[in-house]
Image 1 (cartoon, each protein chain N blue to C red):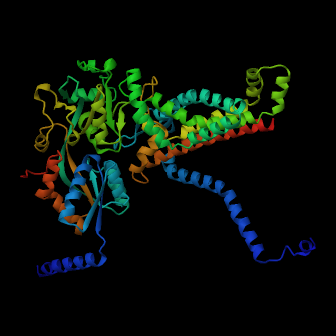
Image 2: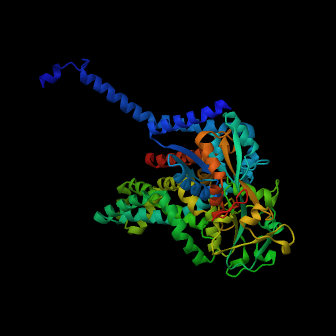
Length: 291
Length: 304
């Protein structure tokens, strides 16, 4: 007890001394999920005002990129929209790194449709027919839908590149653990690219984080089986897990976070940090009241 | 004169050492290409070899169209669709590039004279110097909407788009080499044909082109090599979709683009990483064979 009471001021003092002596700001390297990149950037910016001496450098590239960087020891915090794979933790262990998981929010994975598409609801089975290997739906008419402005009614299936956490999560949630995507999907390199393409292409369907929604695209109401019981994606339906394709969002650190990384993560989990994630269209980990 | 005759050239003064040093530098410069090519080959083989030995099923690798290397339970490493993507784009690029470059080479080599000729040669070389990412950008932002409007297809990032872009990229290189091949045909052939009363076109079609055919074939082969190896432009213009195309309006994905898009995002040493290096080895072998063949073919014409 006495020791800890003593150490804290000592640590603070030495930290202050160190920072004043070195002048250079501490940098936290933060990389990964494209789904989280907007939030991570907003956090990093807001954290500037909280802790001007700490700079958080954020970059995207996909959950796989972030976790790969963590395994290779080049980042302090990896953002991921999926859990780390057992293979990846094995490789990390080989490099002497123990990725530790922190859930920082929830995301509803929205299914995007072009504004002219008359469909409003999608069942998981319909999505499986569209996205799955051997699926029956290659034309909109196969689903009993006629999309104006779409030649041949050919479905343009928009997906993500295969290291994306969104790609992996959508596969598990819709196609099942053993499921596979069909051939010929357009593999976009970012969450925003999916929405951009769907916005311009009447024939298209795509999936991406809810936060990337714009006024020019339609968000399908998703039903597990019966279309009548569909649930629309929103932060609220994501946190109470009534929306069928909502997922937790993760930040990984190497072992128990220490020092300024711990301070940053604690701040992310605080009401201020959680209000920022809510503002960006994701669900916070707990109910928070924001102005 | 007598001074030079009596000078001792073998004396080890400063000049002698400078001489040796320069010799050494030039020697290393000369063999550096060999060192680099062997170094690169050793490096990519080392990175990809674990996959070839342990994980790879050669039949699956070359005949399965399914590329799902990131699947945790059952990853699939089939590059057939990627080969089909690269081959279809390169094939279309050749169809676009051959008429253009052959026409340009004949015009520059046989018809144009003086300033026109010089200007054209400079412009062709300038065209070859445009960075490939710029070409890709043209495909993404200019060709894409044009193809959508013109052919009424849902997506314009297709074999057609990438093929045209790659064709325009390859044409200047093919033009330069083809023109060299035409120039290598001795003037006495032309003079002999003209003396027999042949018209200009007859001279070109009956005499010059047949005589230069090896060199022209070499030009085409180098174009193929370029097409196989091109990355940035096809990455942007193909639509990045693992798919065996039925028509030129299908989106595809190229071998090179797959490496470019995925390599930076895999954990070093993982199966996926090694599989990408195996694709690299495959590409290296193919371009090596194509370039070697082209070289031998071109050499053939020089001797004859």
